[in-house]
Amino acid sequence: MDRRTIPATLIPGDGIGPEIMGAVCKVLEAIEAPFEFETCQGGLAAIQKTGDPLPQATLESIRRTGLAPKGPALTDREREILGLIAQGHPNGVIANQLALSPKTVANYVSNLFSKLQVADRAQAIIRAREAGMGH
Image (cartoon, rainbow, N blue to C red; front, side):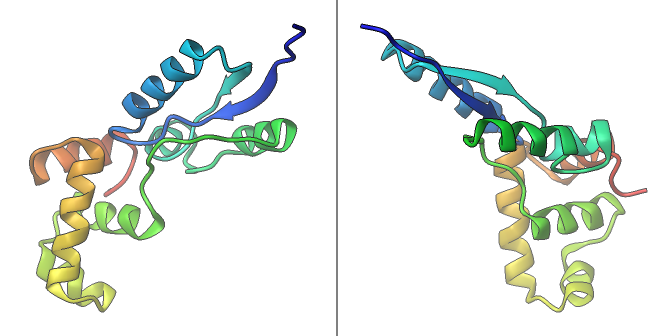
């Protein structure tokens, strides 16, 4: 049987995203899915390298391949909150600044910690600053 390859842009994502996408790729290889992946940056890794969460090179790859599986990545609001955390602001200040309830900010912070695979604010601040946030 002649199997053609299917081009796709693979975007690992943030935090646990690369681990998830690695597992997805292993499953696709195990079932002999005919994908040919071009791995591109997105999310915090892209911000760290290019200053843009979705760099032009990634967009061009997506246009070329027409298919882009991606791992979990931070939303715009999560990046905004992470930036404020990196500046040292507590949840109450973040809530006031963004016109959100303190509970909503706490939920965002909890989700950020999970996505980034960090245990506390200090670790989140380090990840954010490595990506050029919070200065």
